[in-house]
Image (cartoon, rainbow, N blue to C red):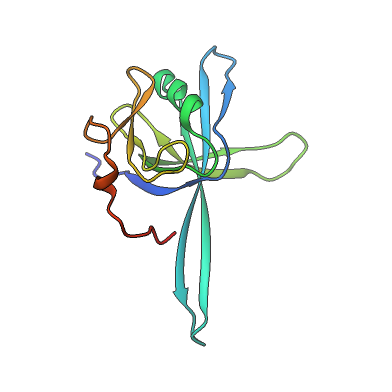
Length: 152
């Protein structure tokens, strides 16, 4: 019996609009590029900002439709999925190439934490109808967001 858990979660900004490709089998695949940022101080006390880029992939038709409508560069997004590394070899090359991706499968979640115009209300993806809706199902009110400025 095998034991283990393969679960990945990211909160970051989209580095580009979603890319959707058609497969030879007739299906589609959506690819997202998500940037996560972190800051730390090095040994000399200098602040270092670091960005990590992540590839996210899904084959779910309803989710792909929703992403085509709403996944645009700069949006703040939360993605749940599982890690998967694939291997391939390009024609004419002697070595293998590898890519580690987060695969969004049924049961995982994709949620936007901002509105398409960049405001701060959370919007949750609903693949069933291809729309984005505010988290909790009710429109966010201006006073729900508070008066403090957002630090980023």
